[in-house]
Length: 249
Image (cartoon, rainbow, N blue to C red; front, side, top):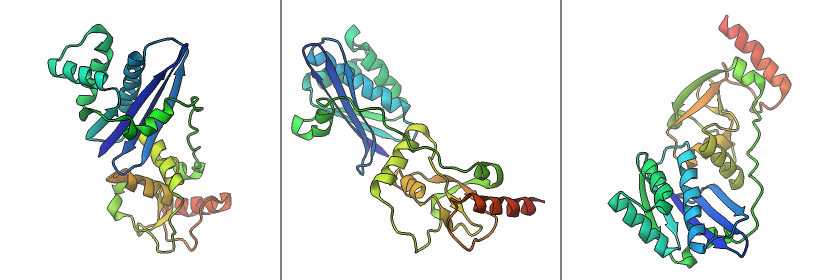
């Protein structure tokens, strides 16, 4: 999978703001940030710090990716960093960037490209607006009975069957789930299947993994084909618990 990353920065009289965004090649936003620091620096230094922050975030992402395409509109910075990467050495002020680039190239292909400001609009807006509060990751809605009583297994995504009655959920919910998985490696909800691999719950999580092109999914099984499809009720988890306990005897 290829990641498209853009960064930008703006320097003011007594502060500077960094902005960057990480997306998949099909446009799914994994992360976007706006960070303000109360210090006076040059525009070039602010751009370099934005690049450093972006590279650190790329190293934190847990999903597999084979290429990272990093783009910025500071031509001078891009030329200097690419030159340092070719030579393998860098002046002191570019040492941290070179160090982060080398770490990243051990994991995936890295390309640094200059783009005009017109093609860097999203990162430019992030660097000019007030910093946003930290994104609230979805809370886990998993019932305690799921972890305790349902069998878990990792299976290929292609083995999961989707009922025809399911309608596609809102796109922003899928992207929110995909972002949570990309940053933590954990789904914020369970994918629940019956004994015939028919999806019973967790359609949003399934679509999020499809969007990220994940090959395998960690699913949990209920030991029978249920008569109804909703599992968000406490009483129904009690019913599943009793059936599962008798199934394990």
